[in-house]
Length: 490
Image 1 (tube, rainbow, N blue to C red):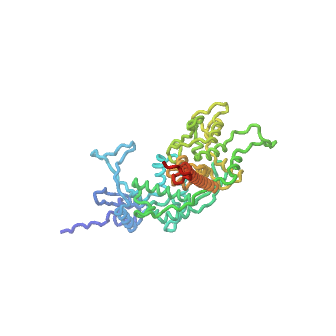
Image 2 (cartoon, rainbow, N blue to C red):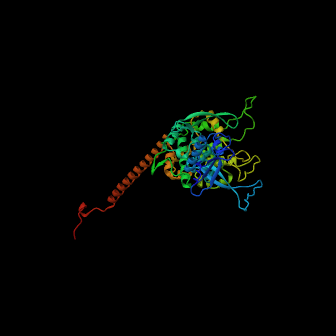
Image 3 (cartoon, rainbow, N blue to C red):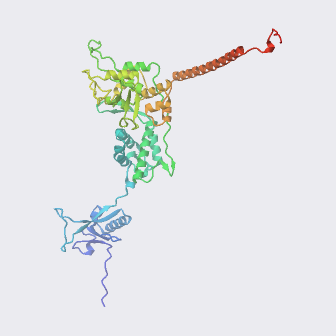
């Protein structure tokens, strides 16, 4: 009996050519790879050169490539999917029996988002999906923060230096945040070119800046946890907070000595004729001084003053004159009412008319130009004013502290000051303000005067009591035993 023919064990490796099997190792035709995936997957019949991405020559090299492909399929690094075949017109290609034909495509398995998500991608999603919808007014500042955070270069645990934005979120832990803190908290002066082509120096980094950046990162991770983009936050280990914000030194800068007078004088300098060096006959309308005086009188923020419109000025000629600040124009998104002082009333009355002598419309801006058009920025004007006045280290926001501190020194209750400044709690107002030594001595003087008046009142009451007692004694009749003349007894 004839023995059965022995099958060749090619393990899915073959050639589709007319060459004899003994010549496959040397012929130039490409190798082909056959594989049937377990679990009911599609059968793969592909050109090995296409799968390996290189030209495969000998059988030994082909077997090595096949084993690598099998291992990739077992690990899930490669996946096979069936895709319907389409003709040039986009219509499905049918078999002779009228069924659609399919082809098998090999692609790399897509890793979970949590494994490939970078910090830059996470922050971009946070800005797009949350900040744009919930905090649109802070969008510009947040985008600037995100750029600074992603641009910080840190050392990976492997020693490679990489921008923080290119770090995978799964690699960011407590150590990475501490490295970021150490990098950002060192303050430096950098020079950058602005949109006008001028080089300007600005501060970069510092403790407050680092705290703001860490707060943004913490908010982004908490938001990502709620949406399921990440599982944990590097700011916490279980329920314990392991990354905390650094302690900041409260800013206490106020106007000192004659700085207030010098500042107001330097706000809007008199324009001189370039040839005669004499003052010009027509001087422009004061621009910065009214804003500075309004900041001292109201304690409003710079943005609140620049966005102030005449419809917000209520009852200017009446008794209950005030500024209505709607939630859409305040930092805390809460309505606020600020009373108008006598000095501020005079400033507003001078700015109420346009060049034709008519009242500006309700939608005109109070501290805009002559026509009521809005002033976009006063940063340069403020910087030049402080330089002319010889004042260093004074920020425009310090005028807000100056206003609140003056109110405290004048005896305004702290709760009322909190309402005027728009703080959410009284503790914020207490730490925000700073009373001067003069104000403290004035408060002590008022206290001592009150005590003196109380002592005098008590003394007056005592003297009045003594005098009343003496008067009562004088008015009492003398007793019989005290009489000196004997009366006859009947």
